[in-house]
Length: 252
Image (cartoon, rainbow, N blue to C red):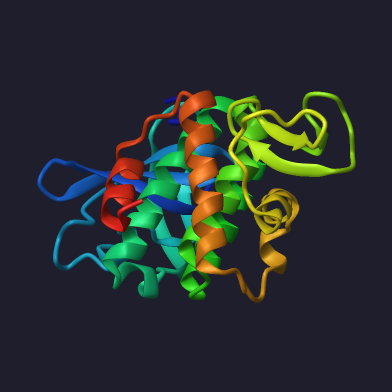
């Protein structure tokens, strides 16, 4: 008799953060894991909704860790185990911070789907960690929003006047044209403070992991956020419910 060929499935260890979960039957669910290695993948989590399941608490939305899976390309993978690296308890215990995280999750996954660039995962995770460290969530959010612009194909000109190329006498930054405006080209654009002009450039180029302290006045933070909101509305084509909810909560 011909022996049956044994199918050996190899377990794959992948780092990621759960960005969505969907019930499946009475005791199972499907999670979507944002990873640097494979992008956003779906994983079947069998029996994890059971009160007796050890994985019940380890497969909640926004859990970050190592996931041990039977990986299937372009299909649902199957979860075997989880090692939690961080469950972001500080964020999860604050309704405002949860709102920021919901928005950044929706934004980051949308940007990733458009660009398919692995750096998006790194930016997203670094930003979430800084919010967990109690850094100003609006500043961190704005930094991520600015860093995502090139991946959406609508990057800003922050090295010279966007109209004439002049690198000196910059007087403002304009959301309608997408960059710096020098004194010679200034007509009736909205004037922002010199500090805001400089800080937007810093946001754009700063390494998120290197941020250890944020000392920015509330007025400058609000002015930068106003500029970014206006630019996103005009150029990105992204209209996210989580952003609208966040703006209403913060009265922005």
